[in-house]
Every structure is written in C-alpha cells, then in structure tokens.
Length: 61
Image (cartoon, rainbow, N blue to C red):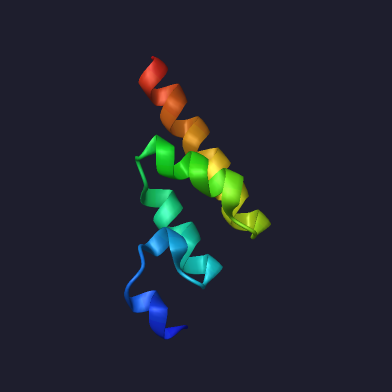
C-alpha cells in the first residue's frame, strides 16, 4: 500500500483487489467506463465490464 492510497478514491488505489471491491459495489456508469478504458489490471477491467453490463441490463428492463 502506498501512502497516497489514503488520499485517492478506491478506484485509483494501488491494490487491484481494492479496486475490484470498489467496482463490485459501484453504480456510477462513467467511473466504470473510465476504469475499463484506463486500468492496467485485466481482472479489474473484467470486473468493471461485468458490473457495467449488469447495471445497464437492469436499468434497461
């Protein structure tokens, strides 16, 4: 854990597990899209895609 992790949002945390935990509870579509486009960890990106898909499916019905 970096010292800066205390001052950044969870989706910018240095630990991918913390970012995945954030993604699994996130409801902001723009943040999820940003994570998909910018995160370097494939597992975080996959989790964000799945969460975004789940949210868009649930709001479309």
